[in-house]
Length: 361
Image 1 (cartoon, rainbow, N blue to C red):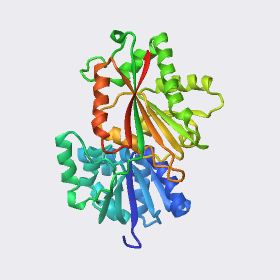
Image 2 (image 1 turned 30 degrees about the vertical axis):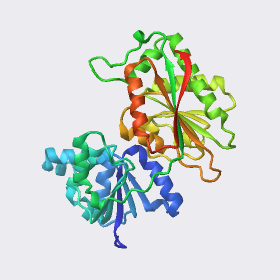
Image 3 (image 1 turned 120 degrees about the vertical axis):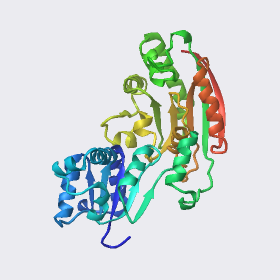
Image 4 (image 1 turned 120 degrees about the horizontal axis):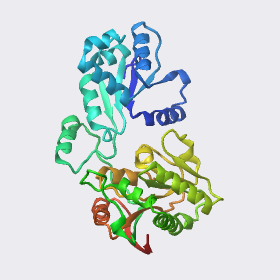
């Protein structure tokens, strides 16, 4: 990269502050060295400054949504965009900003948007980052190879098998009362299941007891002085319900939510955090994370592997790290997704066991 050029990073807006914090800690940058752009007005001001020859930061980070809104507006009417005050088109952005490298983070999460941005921006060099650039869908796999030819990818590193996985099976007492599909949909829905659970006081209490049981057989048995656990569900209401329950059960622990605009410190500093895959399922390195609990159904290969990736190898003391995932034994799709995980995790984990709780929810 030329000495006078800069780095342009494009990513989901939720990752921006995390990336800034980590780059500050690694490179000891000054506040003026990184600029975060979110929203059309900030993007317009950035372009104005560049056109006027004003000094810019070494690193510019732009939210993915901001870029896509700008590009879509350009596609609809370049003239209207110019009237709105934008002094360049998307394909001129990198030249005007003197970008040497344009980087995407977690490209698999928003592949279509990243593909579109790649078509409308031009940089001397590009870097696209993802630990899960594979998909069960043949068309998406084909498009991955089109955008990222195999000979231009970094060689895969050998897998280190250090995670213990435990499928935690339970049964619903009245499975006929558990909705597994959203209204008007033919697909299995974790949201619909959680709404059914939350909507029945008795079922909800027994399900919360199942969460507690899973903590007791895993996280609570960890003898390591520093330990953390993240519990993943689908609905924000479920996140809040679990946190309220666990705070009553374990007043000695710091228990937090990590959703919406919750500060990053919630998940980095709490003993027990309850979150969603969208908030904490990727792009997070959580110190001293010994356990994760997946309390919702997912079948996506990428999501399953990304979930494994939240557990990092604890090399200092070689302590085991464990993923528990809940399986509704008498809900067909839930058990089917369990069988998918048995295949998806093969060769990637140290062990994969089944724990029959005997609990009726």
